[in-house]
Image (cartoon, rainbow, N blue to C red):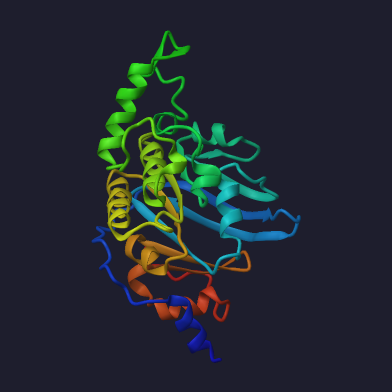
Length: 284
């Protein structure tokens, strides 16, 4: 098999949806990663010397064959995996040694790769899942200690309607929902924090086309509002449609950095397979 054939296999089907229009108005860097080293569950190197920035008003996409360090990279940024070496900063503050909760308080929200394992509590109902992380919110508590049930229901109900979550009621266990509606619960909760930084992994995996379009629109709305968004998806069409810039990973190393409008999917496939490497290919 030639490099060209292998690269073509990597890009999959033809693009179904046109990319969202992008104004190119990225702002200050809100996420900075410098010479990051991360190990996998076996203690072996999974991320090797990775450096990049994500700016306000920008979606930075990660394109990689699964198992090339992208999961460990996002886990390190969000505090779910220790940093072996290097630095990660969110809004100018280091996340090294911080818990996921502490990193959240720096202004980061996270849509995880496995929504059922780490995104929701399946036995809990929709309300409980939508208010996770807000149990100390003044809007939902009385005197800062006791959760106000009516306030919680009202808050969850607003998100339920805004994100078009399809269920009989807010009392339904999240584990009984379709994959698309579980993902809407995660998206609704995380996007409602209005965090300036969003880390999003596999946003539409196993989701139908209607929910996919809905989720894409909300991601781009967040970009327009000024969020810095780091997006990882196994769907290369999705990466191209949503991203302003793309980095390619192979065996835990960045093989290229590109503006989305400056590279084809086929050419990107070469970098995803390690057939080509380039320190940086960007315009601005």
